[in-house]
Length: 102
Image (cartoon, rainbow, N blue to C red; front, side, top):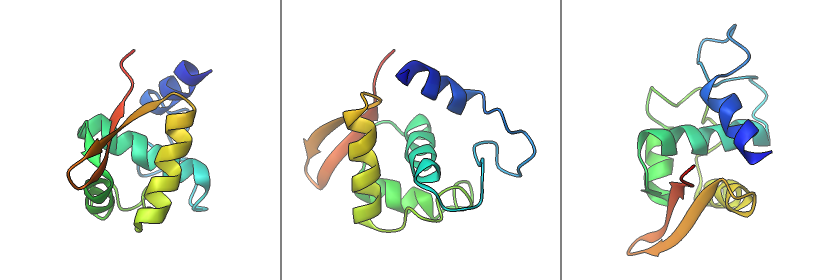
């Protein structure tokens, strides 16, 4: 199940949107999950603070418009961690999140 979820992110089904990973503009929890996973595909590992910084860049701003606070990013990353999709390690400035190696 987790591998299929990651495969859907790598090869998104909806090609009609302006951003390749943006499936809806509703600001759903799935958007936040895609945001964190997309950022970790670019920069792995990344701290919660770094994910928030990257979420506001032009590359991720449409997909990550709901990942602006530490609470949102932390809760989303913990959900992905519990699902076995990302790792969590303590770092000097908080948690470091990384993709699980396939």
